[in-house]
Image (cartoon, rainbow, N blue to C red):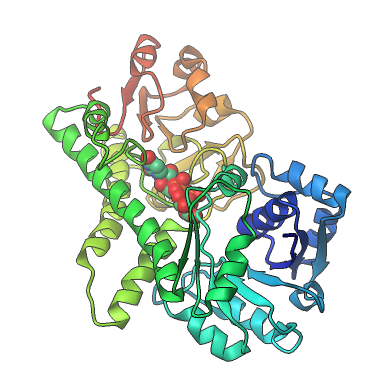
Length: 423
Ligand code: UDX
């Protein structure tokens, strides 16, 4: 059934949700407070790097199924069936999720929501929020967590593993679940707290898995094992699975760090410690320290005045998102110890504090004592490594993503070091 939908917030979650729901045949109005952004979206211009999204937005505009307006209240119409909240819930100073944007939008629309309109939260919110917000607005609130990965958000939306909807009002939950009819995925209709918990539990499980594999990589380095062989051996076990087993410079992005801290906070608020998750967060810092130690070693102990070339700044390949990127944290830490940082990322241009950002990867490695690969952009594999060796002032390439062919680099006269891999 075609529904009338309002989506508030046009970040990668809101815009993907709006454009994909329009593609599924619904009538969608997307709202944002940034008038200039709304103007660009009306012209079919999408700022974020999300494969396929601009095409869907332009198609939605052409068919008239997708519109953009300024401000949440402009998106609500007398026959709106569902309002999606897709506004940021950043990490507050104490680690908890900051709900000010959610509360402000609800305050703005509560008096104009038509009777029977369901409000669905895509924003990750603390467990119990849906029920609390329902009391505030007097309308049913449905938790409908998203599991979209940046860089594959459209594909993840259109080919989900599962649809999760939860509310104390089951018919509102079903109404939201039915929006996804046509997608081949099991739909779980839950209570609100369980739906909210699924999102945290899933993201935090992934964070724990990554911290575990990063710790195993550190161990492999010290005992002379190869983490690639080890994770292959682990991944054949279907209880473990093959995905999310790649070591790196630490996990980052707009969700995992925020959600891990928020769940620790949720646990604390009910008198639980959750040391496992705390350790995963701590291990993420250790992974960063491990990278910094290796750079110091390669620079004979001191970073003062050392020129370091960085390849990659985004928190992962396929996105231009720098939020909580381990690459930025590493660059900042190196700069704080006096290193001179030059960086190249194929998706990022402009200015960044403390970093000389260049458009050419060869410019980034010129004169560098050490080169670090921090984002797994496939194009770094096909760099001319002989040219890189000629341009560098040193020999060491620290490949924190295990992206490169170590033998090829050795033949070019470079010393390649991966994470958890023999040199
Ligand atoms: C994540 C969840 O995967 C998604 O379901 C949720 O909706 C939002 O948060 P995203 O933040 O886009 O998605 O990134 P993801 O692909 O999960 O990667 C998270 C971090 O883990 C990145 O820093 C990435 O580089 C790192 N990572 C991932 C690894 O280091 N190794 C891996 O094998 C996988």
